Each structure stands twice: as C-alpha cells, then as structure tokens.
Amino acid sequence: NQAVTLVKKVAYAKSRPSSELYLWFTLQDYWDMDPEADDSFGLVTSDNRAKPSFVAYNELIRELANTDPQGEVELNPAVRSLCFRHDDGSLVYVCWLRQGEDATQLWLKSGSGTVRVTDMFGRSLDAPVHAGVVMVPLGGEPLYLSAGTSEIVAAPQSDMFIRVTGSLVVDGDTGARLPFVFREPLGRAATGRVVLGDSDG
Image 1: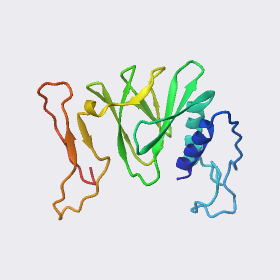
Image 2: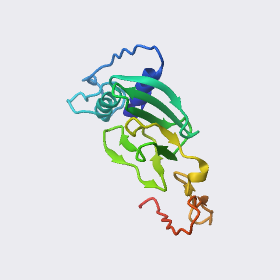
Image 3: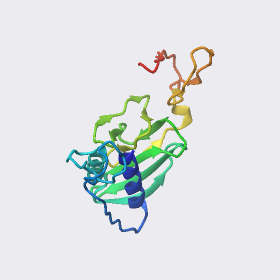
Image 4: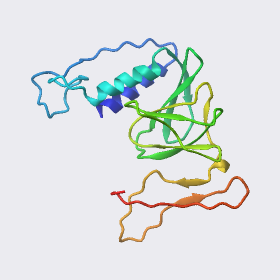
C-alpha cells in the first residue's frame, strides 16, 4: 500500500505544469517501531531490508526522471492516465484505477503497433495485440505504458473484439450470468475460445 500511494502521489505531483517537486522522507523505519507494524514511512525497514516502496521508488525514478508533463489523457473512464515526455521524444504513461474501481481492461492503440507494459516494480513485457488492438489488464497497482515516440490512445469501441469485466465475484450456487461482448471488426468469420477460471486459477 505504501508503494502504491508513493507512485500515485509523486506521479501526480510531477504531472502538474510549471511545478517544482521537492521530496522529503525518512529513508529508514524508526528502530523502536514494531517490526510487524505498518506505521513507519521509511523505504527501508529498521533491520535494513528494502521495502516494496524502495523498489517502486527506484522504478519511478527510472521511468519519470528528466521528463516533462504532457497532461492527463483519457484511456478509460475508470483509469487516471498521466503522460510524460522524455528528452528523446519518447512518451511514458502512468496509469492507475480511480477511487472505487476494482479492475478493468485497457483497450489501446499505438502508432508503433505495440505497447510496452511495466509494473511499478520494473517487470516489463509487450502487451498482446489482436487485430491492431492492445489489451492491458489493470488491477490495484499503477502501470507504466510506453510505445516509443508513438502516442497511445484508447481503441474505438468498434475495434474491440471482446469485452468483459476485469473481475467478477459470483456465488456458484446462484446461477448468475457473466457479462460478455464479442465483436468481429474485420468483417470475416472468426473463431474464439473463452476460458473461465475460479479463484484458484
């Protein structure tokens, strides 16, 4: 939770135009605090172990150092998306769910055709692309999106071939229906497979 809050606050502060950002924090937790308590603000525990917020702060610097804010973009109504530009012209987007949202899918397009997704701890991969549309699941942690110098935009509804909620809790005894939308935007016959997993996978 500390790592999530840190990324959101620093990214938001840095996104404000004409702002200068100064940070002050306690690097290490207080030695007299309960080791199991989450009531210290340091990035390192009192016994010198890096906390998740330490790793997240390191990645935040890697992603946003020497960038200029480009404003907020609309990639999904449930998501706050802040755009930053590096000196070489490449763009990076910081995205997280708005208050009250649990999970969602981002349906995106980029001029490069691909979108690199990096989680707040630095793990990166290229998001899957289907019919020119990139799908990125977004849960409780912020993500960084990049496509070089290409802008990332929300894919038009007509380009989405499948739409489901990010997550849905269903009591197995109620016989509830799962909301699911399928489209075939290329105008030809298509086959697909839907896999439904329980909480154990």
